[in-house]
Length: 495
Image (cartoon, rainbow, N blue to C red; front, side, top):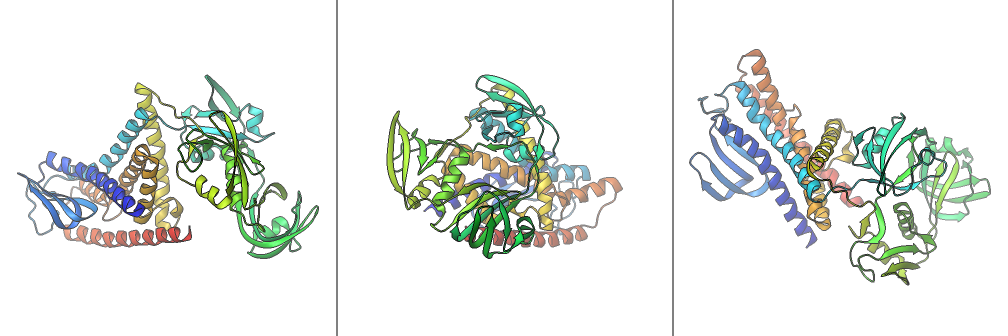
């Protein structure tokens, strides 16, 4: 049933995005006197058709896209004054450009609607590491980061990117009713390793000296999965090295970002909306970071271990919890305890939207809401513009989804509510607009290039040559879609 809902939601979202895009082409074609034969949603045989005076509107059986069919797109048609290639090149340029521009503008307008009605979730500091640059600058847990270097910041990826430049940063933070300006100098960290061991025997010490008699950091440069013996300052520990995540040296200020609080956002099992989670087993739950560590501990089997190493010093160790764990929580001011099977508790805590967000939404008013929404959209558009080109050379593929991935994203958004769905629609439609601006055959950007060449040279381009290039580009684009679909399926199967 969930899959059906996800697919229906995806189709509705996708049709809206396509209609907005194609309406841009349609409107400017009509504005410049180009005849529009059809405005269609979907492909294949028609299931609904309405004949207009100048344009037929139709809905086709396969709702995976849409199109406007303009007079003159077919090479067999004459280049009359009301055809696409019968008007001047600058008019054709604007007709083609209108689709991507309408997509991008729709995204901007949606963000204005979202921020005006629901506000936005700012970045909140979950935890400040002792003796870090952040602590020295006066940053505290629960501080809300409004601006960096005088500019609004909306996501942790953006903030991290600025910090990693290593330059001093000025933070405008909200602490209660106060607004504070703090200056922080990022510092270079040690290389960090997140290590997952199975079939563990022995106890981990404070410092790792070697793995299989090879100095720790040397071994990690070319580590391989398998049975290992780890020598530490307090003895040896052995097990199967199953997974290692490595963070290189980087500039940081020593904070963890807040994601969600320890307060339940809705009723589930014995918990009611507003109940506050206090501890799981012997682990206190006061922050997102502590909750994630607790979920990791719940997910470990009895002979597994997960630990973080900075340089060669063990920073933290997460050990498995018992099969039955004691959970402490507060409900209506009353302290309660209850025992849970850990698999059941993981299922509860993994439910989408089960916990309230750590940061309360900020709802700006009037022109401020518009300026913040535009700033939010600008940052997103810039990120997309920098990221998308890499996919054509095999980079940034982890940041991109194909049709299957988008179905999953939209389906998850439906579970969170209408606001989240609108955010996803805004992000996708801006993505579509920018993607279509790339100067590639079959995309609007490729057609824009041909119109620009004609405007500059003042010479007509052979339409058969242009159509051949676009046809080749279309099949290459189709191949890329299939490629992304296989990647999506691979991600789905490995979850």
